[in-house]
Image (tube, rainbow, N blue to C red; front, side):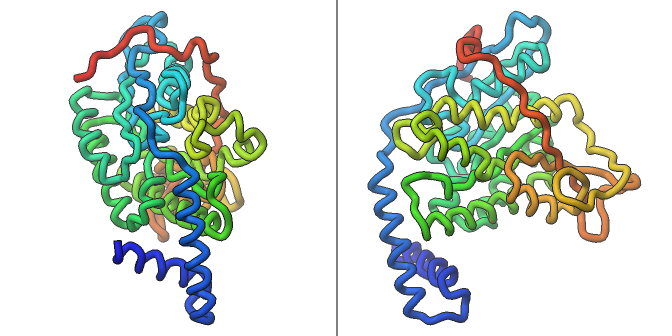
Length: 340
């Protein structure tokens, strides 16, 4: 605990004075941030139970061989805060994928509430036994709140992505959301949370694409909706999304999941995009842009037949059209899948 407090003090002080200010200002800023953190912790209620289980077969009426989907990660992937199985993130992605591909989707959610990136290893181990076609991972928020170093968190994420890709599984990662949108967190702690979240998301994007996966930046994608309709978009604890919030997140991720299954090869670019928005960039630049523009997909690309340029691996930025997901009543599995 003492080590963590010292680390937090250094971070708060550095943010306050930029390495060249008055020491007293840093101490005051740290005290303010620490006080807000304690207040937010008291405001957010503890976990009261597991999220609804939504495992099952979706779109069975389509016929044909089922697409095997695994959802891994933390509470955002598990759907904590949703009142019914059909309201979870995993259920929304599975139902939407079935409708887009016109095939059944057998989905199993292995995400664990409170998981950090280091907790992906056992989830991946179970997932690989199911021989999935695609895995969706949402992780990073708990690494930020627990102040796990970005390097450590990303190393665990890369290990998970590589293990899945080595088994032929397509991987889509929803990068760390912007924790600055959470209502119990007030400035200046909110500003720090936003900065840390973007740093994590940028590092995740670079590492995941290098490991053969694709990313979708969540960032403050839902920020405007959360601020405009907090009673509808947040769950009871004012920290996790509601069913409506999870549906919005699934709408952002789904197009990339569809693309991963239908367009598995790297994009072949004719030229290099120079402006904001879509185009081809060196991966570090693409990751930075994506972290500041929610809803951006980043995947590997080729330019003139080459994977890499002077600044590193080429990457494609896209803003895909959000798919309209099935109505609430239709996002229920046709058949439950027994746990392995």
